[in-house]
Amino acid sequence: MKKYSRPINTELRAMAYLLPALVIIGIFQFYPIFKSFAMGFYTKFDYLTDRVYETGLGNFKYVFSDPDFYLAMKNTCIFVFFAVPLGILIALILAVLIDRQRHLKSFFQSVYFLPFITSTVSVSIVWSWMLNKDFGLVNALLKLFGIPKVAWLTDPNMTLPILIAFSVWKGLGYKIILILAALQGIDTQYYAAARIDGAKAWKQFLHITIPLLKPCLTFLYITSSIGAFKIFDEVYIMYAQQPGPLKSGLTIVYYIFNKFYRHWEFAIAAAAAFVLFLIILLLTVIQFIIADKKER
Image (cartoon, rainbow, N blue to C red):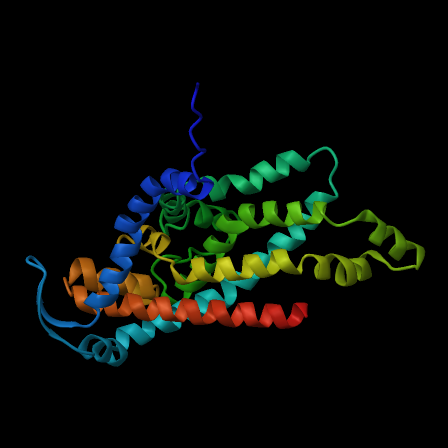
């Protein structure tokens, strides 16, 4: 008589499928996170043999007493404050305009999405060429209108505006695609009822489109804020591996990079990275709480 084996438990089978990926994630993501957190408390250690002789809060005290850290925090906060809402606002306006197109909708989606999928390094190199004072495209266009050359990349006052413009432009495609997808989920009967009541397009946008897009906009605001706090690549490439003129482009991640790779102060870099993690975590929790209260 043929014997039938019992079916393998579904949960065990799922764990068997997930185990290789979980092992890789644990080794290359979770372990470095915990290790960097622990390293933030190393005050005396041998990084070659991984021997720790003393621990304490000395690295955190150094970070909070370093003027460069506060400058990096200031620059990063200004960047986040302007880049995130501007990017979402412009993406929202463009998405609504594109949604009304019938024939060129796919074309505009592709055009705006192209910068997002392009490498940040490649785009940064193009921007640095365009903004070059002597042979850049932007100054060449300004010359046609009789406007003198502008030192875009060497003027400290222009660093943050350039980085904000770059971030807004590059992230438009991703935001537009998500907002367009959310717009497709809005029932057209709401707009039909509003038109019957005499509501104009602006009223429909404020009282129908915006409220129904709140979950999507909240998601974009949280993810964009997290990404904005981690700005580094564009600064490193556009300003020739320097944090901008007079450190005007020094961000928190660039501060961590300097301490780790250039000064070999690994423990201080780990402490600064943990501070950045706490800042992002705190802001994310606050945003979730505010969004939850508004939804209720």
